[in-house]
Length: 348
Image 1 (cartoon, rainbow, N blue to C red):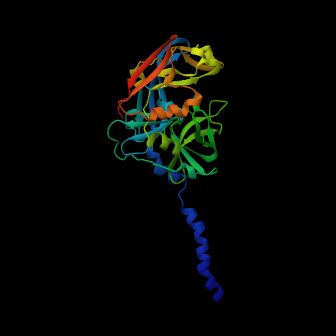
Image 2 (cartoon, rainbow, N blue to C red):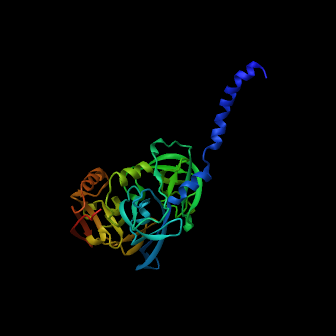
Image 3 (cartoon, rainbow, N blue to C red):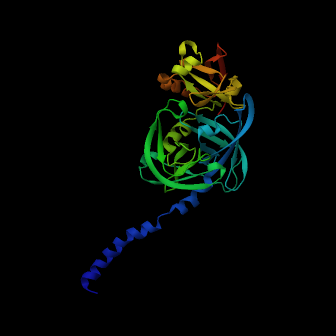
């Protein structure tokens, strides 16, 4: 070997180290092996109205996903999975089950926090929350959940886009979302989206589809939104599920002067809304192609602030200033009458 070749040998070896190190980087199977133990299946029990008998209620079971992120048993999930659930059962990868308690929920962002009741199963795995601000479009991601009830299913895709949604489920907040082509179906809701370092960067929210199944348009609320709304602060869980009514729909529902309000459709048993005496709907109707439960209360004011799109910030400030034991006052339209409903916030 020539002296020149010998001199270049260390440089050539150093240059080869890049690809060799890249091959040692964790692959999808390694990341999944590390993180899948933190993913739980949430089985819920609630009530709904029978389409064949619009004023008759029946028990209904639901399934969603979540991710355990603290040793205290805190689980992140989607608000629509647990918001009006009468009961939440947490199922771990080992098959062990126990009750979960909804602690916080922000339906406008479709994120919620459930706490496992009792000690965690031995060997329970917790996931780390990542910084979603640093995620780039095109990055590979993993989604783990229970699509169609089949628990601990892995799907792989990429971040297709970053989106701002001006209102999930007929609400008003502007929420940051990751769009992904990873396969997402019913039951994935609330499950984690992981980056290739095994950090949670999103909570699966919903899909856009014409068939009811996966079509490559899935959306996850970013981890930083979930952290800000549920970890840095702890809003209470109301247990009331519904939607904002305004404009023509508010006129149809005969709100005073066509005022906007929050139409209560379902109320979870033993929730704060249930203790307040709020009433959900009992009449299933089709309004412009959308099924609505009518007959429930319409909340017009909270803490003296009108429930309408222009007051979102004011409403949030009013509620964020409340703590356990503070009084909450609402103006409610019920059966054509205006009622004042009051109650004290539950303990954390």
